[in-house]
Length: 257
Ligand SMILES: NC(=O)c1ccc[n+]([C@@H]2O[C@H](COP(=O)([O-])OP(=O)(O)OC[C@H]3O[C@@H](n4cnc5c(N)ncnc54)[C@H](OP(=O)(O)O)[C@@H]3O)[C@@H](O)[C@H]2O)c1
Image 1 (cartoon, rainbow, N blue to C red):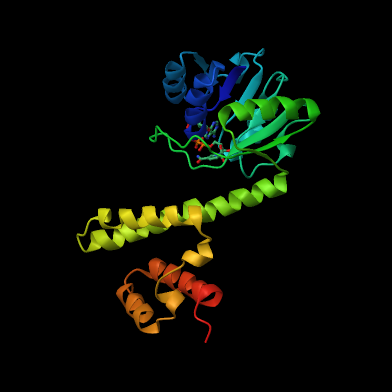
Image 2: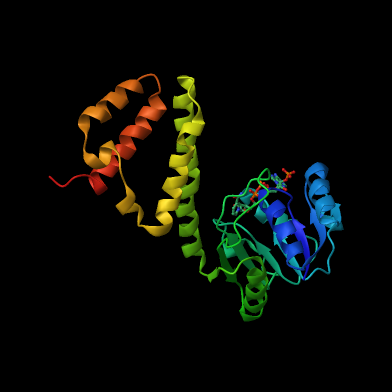
C-alpha cells in the first residue's frame, strides 16, 4: 500500500521502517516540527511536510500516530477525505473520526515504543477495529503485514487492554526507577537488579503472575515490611507506594492464617 504517516514520534518511527521492510511504500511523513519529520522521512526515503494542506491526497492509507490530545483537531483540520484512515491509540475512540471519513479504523500496537529503541519483537499484538466490512478487510490485511497477531475488538475492550498495559509497563517501569534511586542513594549499581527484572518478565511468559508472587508482603513478614518503611522515611512517595502495594499483595495473595 502507499502509506502517509501522520506524526514522526515513537510509534511512527517504529511503524515506518517495519512497513517499508514489509513492502509498503511510505510516500510522505507529516509532522508539526520540521526536524522530526525530516529525520523520519530521510530514513524512509520519502518526502515530508509540516502543512496539513500539503498532505498527499491519493495514498491508500493514512496512519495517524499523533499524541492523543491532538488527534481530533488534526482530523477536523484535514482538508480532504482520505480513502482509508486509522489511528494508533489505545484510548481514543472511533468517534474521533469526522462523519465524512466513512472508511476508518484503529491499529493499536500493544507495546511500549521509544524513538531511541531500534529493535522490537516481531510478534507485537495489534488490536484492530474498523468502521465497516470494506475497511475491516483492508485494515486486517494491512495489519497482518505488520504482525502475525491481529486481534479484532471493540473500543471498550481496547481501552481495557490499554489500562492493563499501563499497569504492566508504565507502572512497572516507574517502579524500576524507584529501585534505581534506592541503589544509587547507596552508590550501588542498578545492574545488580537487571537479571532479577529480566527473570520477573520471563516467568510470566510461562506462569500466572499470581503464582509467581514472592516477597515480604506475600509471606506476611511484618518485621521486614516495617524495617523497609523505616528505611523509606525520607521518601514519602516511595513509602506510600510501598505501603499501598504491600497491602494489596497481602490482601490478594498473602498467607491465609
Ligand atoms: N509510545 C507508545 O509506546 C505507544 C504505544 C501504542 C500506541 N501509542 C499511541 O500512538 C499515538 C502516538 O504516540 P507516540 O508515542 O508516537 O507520540 P509522540 O511521540 O509523543 O508524538 C507523536 C507525534 O505527535 C506530534 N504532536 C505532539 N503534540 C502535538 C501538537 N500539539 N500538535 C501537533 N502534533 C503534535 C509530535 O510532533 P513532534 O515530533 O513535533 O513532537 C509527533 O510527531 C498515541 O495515540 C499513543 O497513545 C503509543
